[in-house]
Image 1 (cartoon, rainbow, N blue to C red):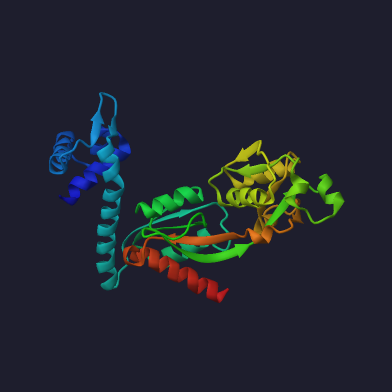
Image 2 (cartoon, helix red, strand yellow):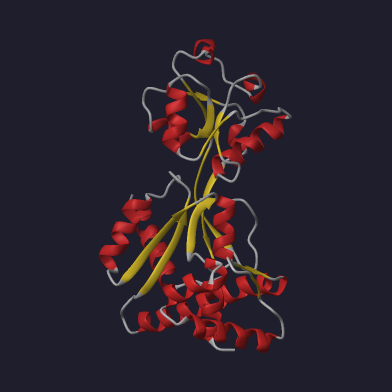
Length: 296
């Protein structure tokens, strides 16, 4: 099995089209088709269902895709490791992150990384924590900064970075502010909530807080960005339960303590492959983060 066959297979699987994949790979369409046929012959299984408009993966193709991506990521890591031994860090750093992740100044960290390693191409992707964990485990991301969603596995390990309690964020004219009491999930049962997509870390923590209290809540106002959430609260359209550091993002809003929320802490982690599969670029970024935290 040749690496180029796997590269060609992954490109067709991602583009779902032979012509587009061939253009991206800078190869002829006939050459790409021949490469896929050779791989199918070797594996003795069809990998794609072909139509005039698109191609889709067969069951065998789906089984191969994650393994092919992982193999290619390991090969890339091997090349980068050799370059690192020679004193130059090259290649690509593929990073995932949730928005406004606690304890990690992502933009500043990447700027410092680029100053130290200008030959490394940086790629950044924002997504929810569950999706980021899948991307790291599959080898599509070198590491990700996220909320803990699962225990460590053979393909994924975590490094704890920061932890904080959750707080209630609301408009200063909201009735909860006048009450002045420490709130419980039961006090909020009838409120209108603003929250993130269910895959986001803050939403997962809030759902866990209310589930532990036996309180059912609905989220009529769902957003995918922090500023959208803050804007809706600023217009007194709803309240949110968020990590405590969110209160510093909009000074006009009021933050109220939530009783027992600390039992379900918002924990920021770095998600990485197993140590032997971690790329030199990912190790360099984690080392830089540790040094900056030590100097803070």
